[in-house]
Image (cartoon, rainbow, N blue to C red; front, side, top):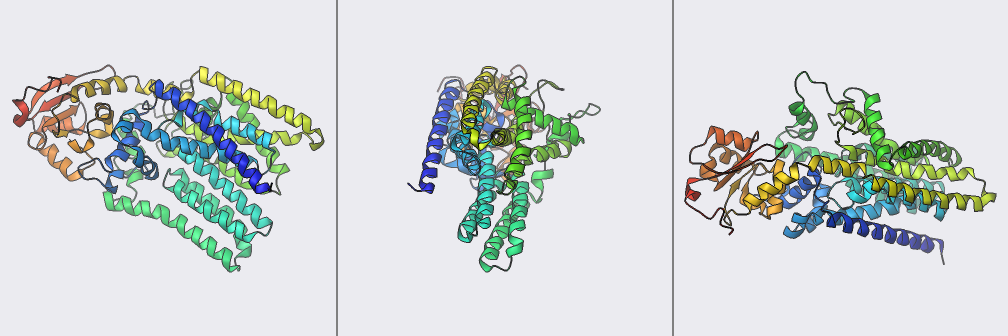
Length: 535
């Protein structure tokens, strides 16, 4: 059997193993109602749903802050049933998890044996936090797959060029370009990843710039990577009047930070301090990789493996693996100067927030320690294999301990949903008794989970996603909507306070740790008595 066929079988077996792990995780998370704990997961499903289920469906519903690809991938699955139970987000994330885990194995196989590559696969695929995220609508599995495969194709490009295989190198370059364009439309760190990958390509292309075929491929790559972010800037300009609305608009991280920071109170840890910001990010990565001191050991092994692998395989195109360290610098900067904090339960302010960002370093912590096996001489191959088997056993044990202790990202999901979910359930129990096909005025960016749980189509609501109708409804709530749901502090509550004429309060919903919500009915519906009849 040929070598490519043998490698293909390896990759297929690894992908099947990842599928089994993902199926086990989905079975557990679905049966324990964990799919919708993250408010961001609910929001991603909401955006995908409103692309067709809204008063003005279309691409305008994508908004201007989150990049569009994750929502477009969820779109085919977000029917009413899967929207309500969260499965719409699980299917794309599982596919991305499988792709990412297979990519880690394939990346390791450029330099390492199948057994040692399996160790890297196990360290990545058995991460309890990643297995949980593979069942949700969060964007981490997608971006991890894109980052890993971008590096895979970049390494392949450089190896093919070193061997003089120009046709294969061009194919790898085009594939890498497609993956990087996807990354640009997934997360903003994808923009930096694309630029750095481009620099690696420039290093190889420049001495061969007179080669017409390579120059044509390089121009295609450069054009695609330049146009992709430009499309997003033009879209922001068209939709909001500001090309940088995602960066400085009312829903940007900086605007949210300005609204939530109390005057005179200390800012979040890492604010304007790259050193502290890097420490918080790196700690979140280590806590996600293993419980107790295991994460610290893994980090030290990764650092040592990076040095060892960089030296031993320095002539075998190992340099692109440095891109896997990108999240450390990117998120340190975002924390320090981008108003994107990370809170950890063991450090001030002793809470959970954005701990999932540390997951972006998981490929680094999974792959680099395996390069330490190269220190064992080739003539002691049996010792290498024995060490790899021991490493697999330790990885399984660490995954078991971390799962028993509850993964950091799941701790955050439970802590931050402890009051939100009971409140949304209470709202849903009230809203489900509204007569069918009525119009509800509601601010959906905050508690859309109530509509999700009640199974109320978004097109029955007047919300901030439909700007013209929204503005008209805020000026005349009773004249534009049959029912009005005002939550303390939101725009609808302010509108009801300014224009209370013709509104009758029919229900007040309060829950510990959450603001109170008030349901009003307009005069045209006030005479109806079926609000609580169970219809």
